[in-house]
Amino acid sequence: MLITLSGLDGAGKSTLTEALRDNLEKEGHPAVIFHMNKEVGLYAYVRRGRDAIGRLFGRTPPPVETGPAGARTTSGPKPQPGRAKAMLLEARRRIIWNKGLRRWVDVGDLATFIAYRMYIEKTRGHVLIMDRYFYDRMADVADGRRWRYLRWFAGLVPVPDLAVFVEVSPEEAFSRKGEYSVESMTRRRAIYREIFSWVPGSVILNNDELDRALSELQRLVRERMGRTKQEHLAVER
Image: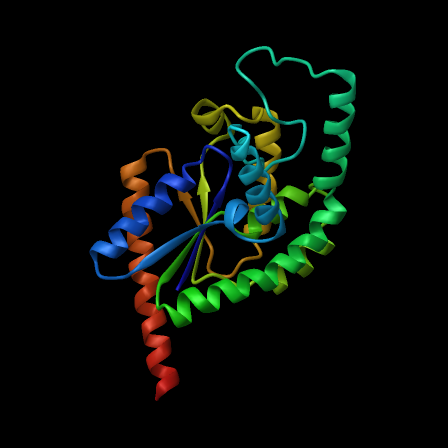
């Protein structure tokens, strides 16, 4: 079974995935969590290599960036880099976060993910819970106007057994994490809503109160598990 949780930074995806995994395992369903940006695909491997090299020199790995460049905010003044470093950072932003490049990378990462999924679900027999999914990647490269590529890519992406958009207001997400501006997250939430309107069987889970959201998530998982089991039995017959 494949369960995916998507949403704004600060929506509570990681908290919900960890709690869901723990509850599934208590009920006798082994489960594993994959973080889309840390464990799946080319950028994840690049980050691992970068962080490994940094640790050799005693450096702390930087936070994983997911959203549009230039939208990140800080609680205080940020030290300005020197001119040479600023030029390198700008070149990195234009190359690594180039939307055209990321679209091709996502297509390649899709093949990697399918292999991971086959191993986790079919070989090991575990429930696969994704903290972020390709729908989040699609939101990264969307501009809110041109949808042709995204609709094409959405047709390639394996539809999860349960695809969840974890909903919070941009203001609440900012108060929880403070990484991106409210304006930026307002645009991003509208993009998520458009993308999820294309996903069969997707659900919007309001996470303004964690215990209630987790209870509803568990109910949805049990419901989809029962449906999946019935479908497998029907195929066997």
